[in-house]
Each structure stands twice: as structure tokens, then as C-alpha cells.
Amino acid sequence: MKPPCPDSGAIVEKLRERGWQPTMSLSAFISDNLDAIVGEWEVFAKTLLPVAGTMSDLALRDHCREILLAAVADMQTRETESQRAAKSQGHAPQEAGADTAATAHGALRHLSGFDLVQLVAEFRALRASVLALWSRRKPAGLAAAGAPEVSTVASEIEQITRFNEAIDQALAESVDSYSSAVTASRDMFLAVLGHDLRGPLQAISMTGRLLLKPEMSEAARQQAAMRIQRNSTTMGLLISDLLEFMRTRLGSGIPLARTSCDFGPVCTTALETIRAGNPEQSFDEQISGDLVLCADGPRLHQALLNLLSNAVQHGDPGRTISLSAQGGDDGIEVRVTNFGRPIEESALQTIFEPLVRATSPGADLHEQSKTSLGLGLFIVREIVAGHGGSVTVQSSVDEGTSFTMRLPRAQALSAKAAVTSAR
Amino acid sequence: MKTLSIMYVEDNQDLRDTLSELLVGPGRAVAAYATGEAAVEAWEAGAPDLLLTDISLPGMSGTDLARIVLAKNPAQWVALCSGYEFGKHVATLGANVRALPKPFELEQLEALIDEINAALGPR
Image (tube, rainbow over all chains, first blue to last red; front, side, top):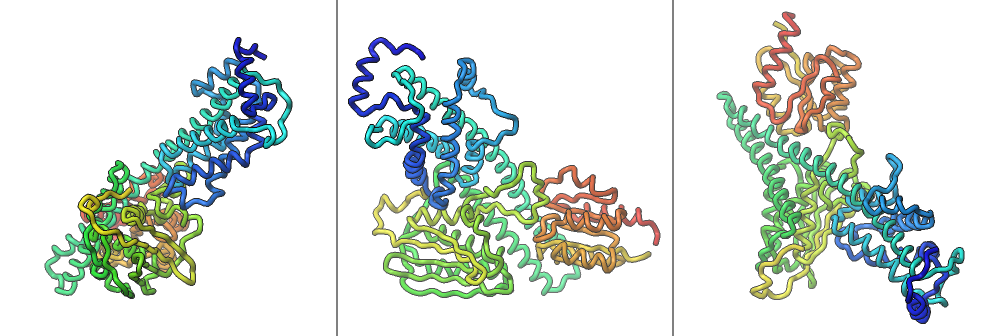
């Protein structure tokens, strides 16, 4: 036990007046008040929208409890000075290949679409929740103290230091696994991007060769032209999505130029584009109500194209794809429905996140039969969010897969509000 | 000279139709399939001289398809095409397995067919 600092008596007296209970250690306090701490932290984590908005409470709080318990165990273990010095420099002993809660947490947060700032903010919130609750604690409202321990200001500082070190250790592990996940995902992103562009490019270049054949019939020539058009559209959509994605990642958001826009013609032209490329697919169109709103027409057209081409890509080709747009008092609701194999429950949570699917390390892309960048749905969400709206997905065998965009009627245009940015 | 038979597996219908039309000609027969499952069934009924398959297919992958047929006939000529970078695993599949990274030129495919024709010898 270290001697208290010279004027600690007065400080301790003041702290006592404010309800400070000197006999309770911070580690015992954390384990006794785990639920309250996790609860407080969870409230904060939920504010990290929109990503957290799609996650269940359980997914949000899962690792928090384990990280805290690991911190408690760490604090309760008597540390030698040398161990502490090593830890503060980021060299904590860790078993080779050990997967701590913090490591799993970092990888999961990447999977859920959190960015690094949000990940760090979570740890700051966790630290702040614990220290705030600890400093606020009142003797009456306290849970029973753990093993009695004579606490002094010096030991209190030591406990806080140890707690901070444990949290820093967990943060370092989380950031480490987060960046490994980022690297893996970037490599995969580039591989899939290459794949998705090379496919239609191959089709276009081979069709070009075919057109060189002199003996082609007029019908075959028409068909060839259609193939080129269809595959160019696919490549064009992918390139626009890629540019929008990069723009949002660079933080500038998708620029929106809002004017008075009638969504009816937006539906018609998007459907025409998709029909031209997929003449054998049947579509059903239901449009009703007042569809005029203050919005960026070309962007909404892009969002709708993405939903329709997603439906064509993943739907059963023999079943009709339906597009409905209904104008109401508050706004308009646009729904694209296709039938076919439903989307799995686990995939629904991250379906709007670009390329965040879980892959085992070193997995061979060739072994995955179907991959996609998933940029399209991400762009849809960004465009809709930029308009103050929302996009949701529902999927089942009987009801099919439906993506629903809800776009509020924007207030009257002001000159300044005419150009806004998504996010 | 005997007809060279090619079994072509590709899920992109545009590419499947186009390449089939480009490959077919005197001394050549092309049968095209959209899935690996359909190709396995057809292969069981009669093996082609060359199995040309895309790797990323819905359901069974082109690599799996190659493994299945090579297990039954290690001498089967196989050309795998893919928009992904090829790893070293292609070489481990078999002696008569080749990789064609997309987008490939028709000449590359023709050169491969010439190589196979030469290897098969006069029949």
C-alpha cells in the first residue's frame, strides 16, 4: 500500500461528503454494476446511426460485457511495474492466436459498417460511463461492496490508471482486428470490382468480334447490339455506383440538386431502361396518388434503377417483378418486389453495407460461387437518406423480397436548401 | 479429321451465346450450359475434348466442376476462365488444366484449342 499524498486527508473528506465510499474498489464496482454500465453505454452506441440502427440490442451490447469483465479480471490481477510499463506501450502479453472479446468486437464492428471513429467513440463512451457512474455512486444506492479494501486517493488513482490501461489494451486489440478486417475487405473489394467489370467487358468484346463476321443476319445483328447495350448499362451502373461510393467515403456525401420532381416519369424511365436490357423479364407497374415532391430526380432514378436491377439479378426470372409508387399526404412510398430465394435473416442486417460479408481469412474468391460488391443498395440508402427518407427490406418465401423507399415531401424550396448533401 | 467437341459453361447468357457462336465452325461442336450441375450431367453422358468453364457460377463453381471431372478422367482438357486473379491452385488441378483470365481475346482461346488439337493428335 502506498502512502497517501500529503493533503489527501482533506480531499478524501470532501469526496466522502459527496457520497464517495472509500472501501469499494473500482473493479468490484464494475462487476457489481455491470448492467447499469452496459445500459448507459448502449444508449450511446445506439446514437451511432445509421449503422447501429440496423443492429439488435444484443448485437450492440454483446462484447461490452465481456470487455468489462476482462478489464475487471485484469485489474484484479496484481501487476508488476514492468508489466504495466510494457502494457502502456502496447506490448501486453497475449497468447498467440488468442481471440479476446475486444478482438472479436473490432472485426464485428467492421462487419456492421462502423467506421474507425465510431469504434473509438464506443470505447471512449465505455470508459466515460464507468468513471461517471463510479464518481456518482451514493452509499444508499450502492450494491454490496466486494472484498473490503482500504482505499486512499493514491490507490484510487492507481485503480483508475489500471482501468484505463485495461480499456486501452482492449481498444488496441479492437483497432488491430478492425484494420485487419479493413485490409481483407479492401482486397476483396478490388477483386470483386475487377470481376464485375471484366464479365460484361468480355461479353462486349466478344460481341464486337461476332459483329465482324460478314455472314450475320439482320436479326442476329440486332441481338448483338442489344447485348452490347445491356452489358454497357451494367458497367455504367457499376461505375456510377463506384464513384458515388468513393465520394461518400471521402466524406463529401452524394450531392443532391433538389427541384420539383414528379416521381411518376422517374418510374417509367427506370423501368424502360431495365426492360430494354431484359426483354424476357415481366414487370408490373402500379402508380397512384400525387408523386410530385422536392427531390433530385436523376438521383432517385439511379436509386430506383439499382433496386430494379437488384430484383432482376436476384429474382426468379419466371416471376413478375412489381414496382409500386403511392403518393400520400406525408410523402411517397416506392416498393420493388421480386420472388425467388429469400434473403437470409443474418444477411438482412448488413444488406445495405458495401462488401462487408464475412469471409474466412485466406478464403479463395474462386471458391465463392457468387459475389457482388453490394454497392447498389448502399447507394440507394445514401440517396434516400439524403432526401430525409428511409429504405427497408423484407424477405420471405411467400411474400417475396421487397425493398421499400419512403420519401417525405420536402418543405418548400429555399434558395439555400436547393443544393444539399447526403449525410 | 474428327470433330473437336467443346463443352462451354458460363452463367452470363450474353457471353455464353456470343462465344458459342464464335467458336462453332467446321470441325468443331459446341455445347453450352448455364450451370456446373447441368454440365456434370452432360459430361457423364459423354465427355468432350475440352471443358471450357467460367469459375464463378451460381451453385457449383467451375473449379468444383473441374475437380469432379478430373477425378474421373485426369487427362481431361479443362480451361478455366475467370474475372478474378488466378492463384496457384490452377496448376495443382491437373496437367491438362489451363487458366484464361477475363477479358481474354478470341486468339488466346484459339491458341489453346490449337494446342489441344495438337496434343490430341490425328484422330
